Image (cartoon, rainbow, N blue to C red; front, side):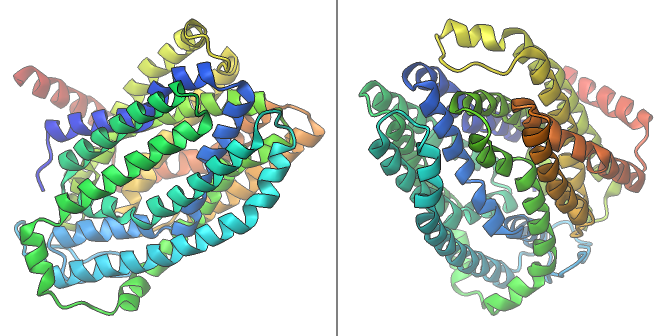
Length: 465
């Protein structure tokens, strides 16, 4: 698996398009949608996060094991991994086909569960939310149910991301993301100008999803792969799922904790805040997500290679990629965070936005906690390459603790929007945010000198080119 600067460039471009597609559409959205309607759209965006709970950690396990297979592993384990001594080991296509069948089965079942729960629960949840809404409710209901169906489709086909990444088709995958996100922007803006309101954004997502999955299918299943898989012998699906289940459940519990820390807070917020306040928090959170993703893009590009280094016991290379990933996060947060604080709201005023960012000191708090989140995310991802999940208990406890603290801040302290920043930030900082970076530092024997050496190596490589 050879990854280079082209992969980094395309990954940054695709990450920008994936998250910034919402940002690029944002001027039209903020200008054409009332603050109330944008607040409701923030709730729409939270719905897709519910599928992360149904995934229950299997996407991470599938991605990691697909990378193992393409690295030459011929046997999967429920914990740990079997090191590969040969750098050009043959791919076990029977094992690959078995993993693909397991992914298709699992996500098919879970997508059906999601759509069933969504359609049953929506009348109760949205009726409560729309009780405060003064606009046309029929349009919101149509957009809501269409969006839920799209989320189910996205979830069912999300295994293509694991296949493309595991095979090392980073550049191609990112090109597909850019193409589909560009179409999303164009279609959404045209529909907004036609006056279709919130439905415009749903139509844009529909075009994006269909384009992305179609191109991904034809990119992964080339002539060679199809021929090899056609003659491959498949293991029983449940055998593969049983191998992945132990760590997947641990990651699933971790995801449940993160859901409580982030998305559940947004879903609860309309019962304590006005819809314009929800929208204000939503756009600020969107900016934080963009900065976190920009910071993690370099590391994400090289993550399949880091996994390969791990199964080949090349720990010095694992350390080099980890340290470089941290340096990129630090630089991105300093530059992008400063820019957001200085020109965020002025730019929104310039485009006549009806929704603003949170005030400066609240935004600074969000940046600090988001920075801590980005550092621990890279650290926990590095630990996962060992096919072990030591952090699931701490995240689950942190999630429960953040919800308890949130209710205390909402109901007893009456801190409003500030509650949504402080509750998860304080709870995570007590243990989770420092524990796992410390664990990786100790495991890989990372020292301050390593940061200096990696920085010098990176500068020299840029000068050569």
